[in-house]
Image 1 (cartoon, helix red, strand yellow):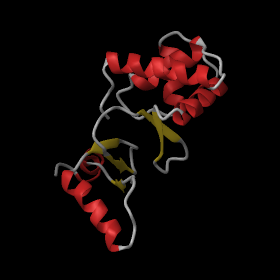
Image 2: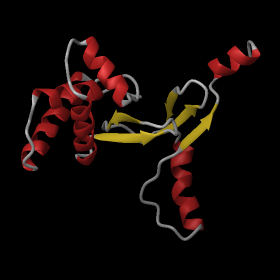
Image 3: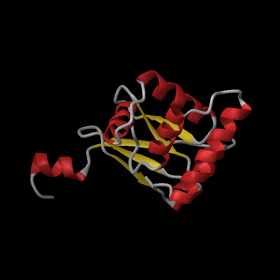
Length: 156
C-alpha cells in the first residue's frame, strides 16, 4: 500500500474535518487520531490494528468511536473498506495514486497491492464483450504467498 506522505495526510485530515462540519458532525480529537492512523498507515489496518496503534501511541479511543469514525471516513470517500474474507474489514486511505488491485494470502492474511497497465486496458474490453459499460472495478486474488509456501515446502 502506498502510504500517504505527510502533506497528503494533512490534506486528507483537513478534508475530513470539513466533511464533518458540512454534515453537522462533531470534529473531535479522537476522530482526528483515528483518521491520522489510517492516513499514515503502511498496511491495510483492521479496527483491532487501529486500536493497537492508538494504544501504542498512548491514546485511549473507544471501539465504538473507531467504528463510527471509520464509517464517516468511508462515507467521505477518503478511506476505502476492504473485506478480504477474514471475518473483518481492513481500511486504506484513498490516495491520489493509480488504481491498484490486491493479492491476499489465505494463510497469513498478507495483502500485496499491485498495478498492471495491461489489466487496466483489458477491463473495459472485457466489459464491452459482455454488453457492460465499465465504470469501476475491484480485483482481489486469493492464494498463498511466497513466504507461506516456503515455510510449507522449503525454498522455491
